[in-house]
Structures are given as C-alpha cells and as structure tokens.
Image (tube, rainbow, N blue to C red; front, side, top):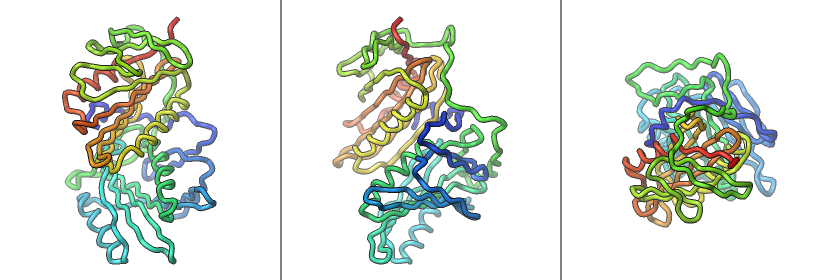
Length: 344
C-alpha cells in the first residue's frame, strides 16, 4: 500500500484466540496463526501442514527455507522452466506485497495419478539469508477452498523480531534475523490525554450502542454508513463496535477474505500491520488492486482498535481503479486521527 503506514513498526502475534495455534520459525524469522484443526508436522528440513477440507478431502502445505539472492525475475523464470520441463502448466505468475516486501507467487496445474491438481508456490522476497517459502497442493475440485484457508493464515504472518524486513536487493548485505528480547501483543490502547483526534465529531449509531466518531477536518458523514471528503473519488464505509483486540482482528480478517471474491484477478496486494497512530488507536490496513468483470477495482480495509471499541473501514474505487497519491495522503490523515468512543 502506498500509504506511509507501510513504514510501520511491526507488532508481533496478536492475543491468542481459543481455536488458533501459532506456527513460529525463529530461523526464518516469521510466525502466523492457524486453526488448531490443522495438522502440523515439523521435519528436519521442512514443515508439513495438512488442511482438512469439505468432503473429507485435504490439502497440504510444505514450508521450507530458500537460499536465493538473485533478482525476482530469475526466481520466477526458474520456476517456470522447471515446471514446464515436468509437463506442468504454469497458469499464472505474479506478486503481492506482505510485510512491506514482495511475495513472489506461481500457480501450476498438473495431473497427479490421474487427479487434476493445482499448486501455489510462494516466496517471501525479503533481504535475508534464508527466505520463507511455501508450496500449497490440492486437488482442483477443492483448490479454491484450500487457497482461501491458507490466505487467511497468511493474513496473520508476522516477524518474530518485531521489525519489518527489507525487500531483497542482491547488491546489499543480508539482514541478520535476531529473536526478540520480549514479545509484544496488540493490546488495548490506553486513553491518552491530548491525543490528536479528528476535530469533526459525529454521533454514530451501531447495532450495539451509540458512539462518537472523530474525523479530520473536511470529512463528514454520508449515506449508508459512509464518511466522505470532497477530494476523495472512492468510497469509505465505516462500521463501529465494542469488543476485544482478538475479536476485532477476526472480524477484520474475515472482511479482507470476503472481499477477495469480488476480484477476477489481483495484481497487487499491500498490507501494513498494526501501528500506534496519533489518535491513540492501533491501526492496520490492507489494499488490493486488480480487475473485476474486466474493469479496474481497488478495495481496501482498515481496522482501528481504540480503548473499549474499534472501527472498521472498507474503501473502494471502481471507475479510477486505484486511489491517487492525493487520495492516499487524505487516507493517511484519516487513519492517523480517526477515533471512536462510546457515548457517555
């Protein structure tokens, strides 16, 4: 995401949720949450994750390290050559952004013992000696379900060091991964006296009560739960609720996953992990750009966790297909000072 939020200091794994477990690899410097129903087996050189799917079927993900310091184009070229030589079809190669660096992705299709099969191969293109790599394999009939579940886990991908990794640059020395001295969680922000919250105050009605929404100057409430600005061509729909940080994150991740189905193809995905804003809220963002029915589409999501409640924002651009730099600056200001509190 072209927002300044991408320079955020990363907060590591959020508070535990009862049905979730944490996969952590200190050597690769990453962790992520996954459902406890998944089976995880750690081998000497890699880990195997089995995802239960509908109809008693399963998908398998292998996680391993990759030692690769060449250009991203060379990685994709090698994957294409290897799979083509094996008689497999390279359906697509692209990249998305996660943790502020590219995730290089390749999808291949082939027949495995007479079963139509698909595989998704991903490499986190970080400037580290060993890179996080995965290979998701599933039968074609259940591949979409498997990819959706795996992407949900990847939404929680974090670094164990608490800092964002730099993107790979073969001309620069690698970054040494060091385990954190202590872990931080996305905890409830404390009320800060003098915090910079938007000067525009709006009475906001939600299903669970009444709130006050603080917006920057120039913003106002629109129809159907939106907030508007005269220089913003896209739409921003806001939802407000009370709840814990894990509950807010779960709702945020679910919204991000559901919006994926609106795209015919995704060209770019950018995300910024939780960051303390000037309002006192902790804010995380995700933005996807691509196409839907042959037309440009950009959809973004933001989550702001305040003292006892949180706000969720869904952003959408259709005609232009992407926010302009000026609009991104407006959104920076919005997320920096947007705050919500219950009416007293």
